[in-house]
Image (tube, rainbow, N blue to C red; front, side, top):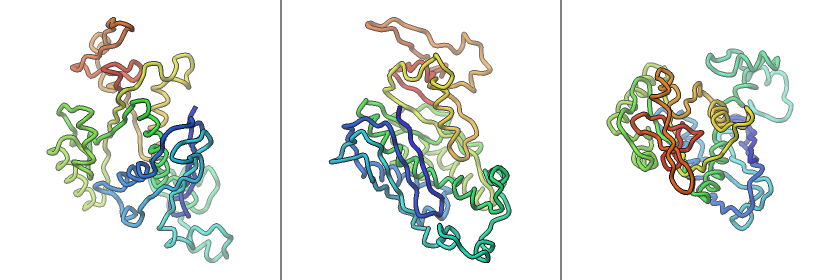
Length: 307
């Protein structure tokens, strides 16, 4: 099993990630990883921090001569902004007057702040918010850059796009190729529909002027996924459950839909279930595109899945 752990604070010296369980012999390009990190830093509504950092991952172990060697892979991303926060994020012990002067005592709503200080007995919210920050996702993106390269050796591709911002939602049909082109064609919003993209950007700009924020929906497609991933025998090995847990662990994510699960909640089973067809040498599930019922457990439609 492949797993990863991240460490580091938002304004600390850097973010680190350790990946365990990667097989040996997988070609790895650092340029590919850094290209993924660059994508993370582009987007309408992003904060000023993105103008300070130029995230670049440095591989410290687990790769030799451009290929994995089967041992844990470790990477680090240095935080350039740490120079401006060295007094507030000092690792060494500091005089009481400095410690008191940099304390944050007002937790933010909708964040981990309040629960974190209550859990650990802190009197400084910064001990919580520095780790709970979305800055941590830079380490996840670096790990994802490794995982994507591994999946490509299995002819599996993954791509995502913005489906909804506020009350503006894509309602036109699109393909996986359309989704893959969104970063190139629309790096700020990454929407397959140019008209909806303009609407979404206007909503973001309006929210910024009003000093408010907006929710949204991101859809991810995986193409070429083989049947049989995960297992039905135990609760913690089911693919849907593993995907949902991973997605819900991302900062600010509050809901996960597998396939068309939410939309199908108001339908009869006869309107939702895909038919099973025999196609030599194995049976396969053929989803009906009009039903939109493609489910990750079945990997129909040429082994595609979405969530």
